[in-house]
Image (tube, rainbow, N blue to C red):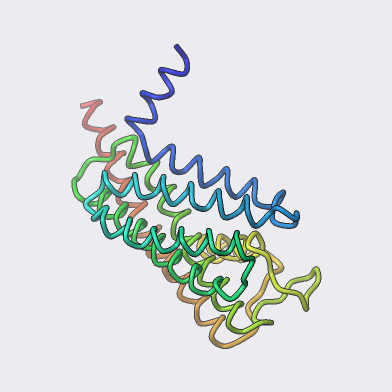
Length: 225
């Protein structure tokens, strides 16, 4: 019965499921990215996230065929990376993954902005969109690092390449404008990209999240009236 209720809940609130999958990935990646089989598990989970996100786009004003069209070559590249271990494919897959997550985030923003109501699923969508944007910038950071090694430094092993988890941590710090963290961009291009992410984070919170909060408060007042 509990499983059936959970299935019904996730069907009503698919954005909640997407958000949970994304958060689960961030918690799991630190355990697997340094293991011998980490690349396989990492990419396999990435493919699963692509599937969940594509399914989510189908419920928004975005076009699912565009999302699927971007996801398919990503899956092919990830499978080739797992089979051959070729690092040369990483920039291509990272660039496409960034595009995929930004398109999914734009689709969810359109979903949240298409009416003047704030549903429970739209509130979950606000969290999922924030995470999608952060993941999109993370893959851009991976792309920049792959093309220009030494772009990012950190307090630990400062000369080595930064892991996906470290770059994801940097992305969330920038997007949320908290400014905490020991991972820093060193080059002009990396800092310009970091500045863009900080700007996007501020605009998202000011224009999208504040709008949903306003609608929620208005609905609460109308209900009391």
